[in-house]
Length: 521
Image (cartoon, rainbow, N blue to C red; front, side, top):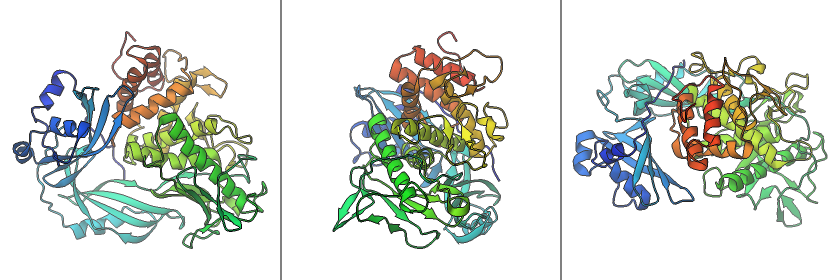
């Protein structure tokens, strides 16, 4: 069951920031240990022990993003009366002097009760009914306050198992009302994309490996220790690290299992470089750490997924179409980077924004990699040919061409599955980068009787999208929110009422995401 998850977003500036400093929003958490911008943000959100007792809210600084001009953006989590607040994070913005200039996030959380009427074991039993597939385990339910559902007291239960295909793992978060026991929302930690692939996509490429005795291992010391290993067409067996005697990997065909591994190893390195050198983020966690890519997973497995710790790729139908192309891998690893910036809830519009972000990253990494066998474009998995016609299974210029994705926002978008609602975000990004109508990469239609858009180029568009996620977006963001966030990001990067900010506004209007009109239209 899916329901629309929304969050009230407030932007407080000038006098509102002054009001925050009085402690009306709640109380701080660990103010003694916090320093710098984090300490200022915590102080702005509460007035010490008295505020804590009055509101029951406490905040913990998660991370701080710092701009080149010295301004900073502190992201904080929240509890109320000791309970975690789902969708309750707050972002506090400070200028270079440490003055609070605004906030983004949920408004004050005030649950009607923190005492559940439904027992935890009953919530655990109910959670399995929301799971499709084979259940392998049920975690202990966690009592939370769901700010995205009207400050509802809820049980959050994680059900582990496999999807109906018997091979795709699932960690389904089930939210049930702690008063009635009714399940009202779910989201899965494991993100997947359907597809298949050809033997070698990138063509002849150089990859970083590690010497080991007289041989070489697929461990990349230049990119956080990225590893690529072979699942040997099982789903549970050990993943065996690729080793080669002459450091020449694959033979351009699926006859050599290292061919698909070379694609994955190359793509993971290029994704790492893209985020490091274009956006200044070192690894998906920001710590420089790499990731493991598991190839040859399952049998006839037409899928790929990121499970929060590693990447996994099937070989497709007939085990001869590995899903290891640059855009597919960058899509999956892109989930990890987006999670590191803002852990978007994987349902409703926020789930669509998550999927849109991954397709955006997939396209941008493909351009960045400039592989001889796989030049950049705005197609998704075009090498995969899952329909047997040579057609891609998606695109950014008109997502609706796949037969299900939304190219334009409508009232049907919020309840749609993430892969369907993602089309709105992808279409916006294409319009922002390349413009509407006929382009070098495909025809982008307008949504209604609105003005054409002239794109500002990929380099600026990708910076705006990344900054919107990094310093403004909250976990339950909607497309209306993303319009606000990207407008703010464009103003930060290129100036208020700049061509870039005006184009952001026009690109959202072109996909039917409405909002306040700035700078005279």
